[in-house]
Image 1 (tube, helix red, strand yellow):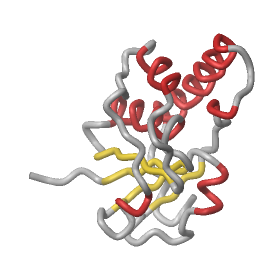
Image 2 (image 1 turned 30 degrees about the horizontal axis):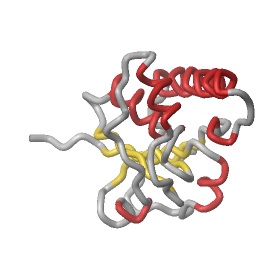
Image 3 (image 1 turned 60 degrees about the horizontal axis):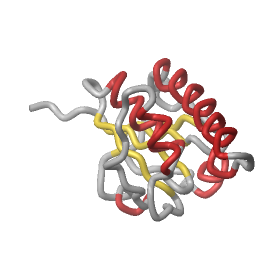
Image 4 (image 1 turned 90 degrees about the horizontal axis):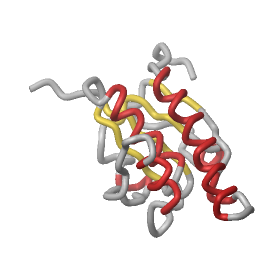
Length: 146
């Protein structure tokens, strides 16, 4: 059996954006890639509003758990690294052993949004839809490009 290339989606907390991106990339390209996500400083749980927003579009991420970057660094042969927040981009190792490509796709963090519950859910939906579009269109850049 031929192994699929591994894609790691990285964020700071691995509780919202990277979890949503993982769900979408699995949906759109799961037959081509083995998709994972992790955080540079993982949260205790996946944000409930991220779970709710993804359920609204038919993707269940409720069984997902935030994972530390260290679970992957040096343990899995990651070919493609996608970083979905600026903070993780700043703290992520600049060189990832074995990675062919590194793509920075920063999104606003809906978990830091301040507003009513409905306004906050709408922010999660807005960011979810941006991530959806990005993951639908993602393809690895040519080797050696960012």
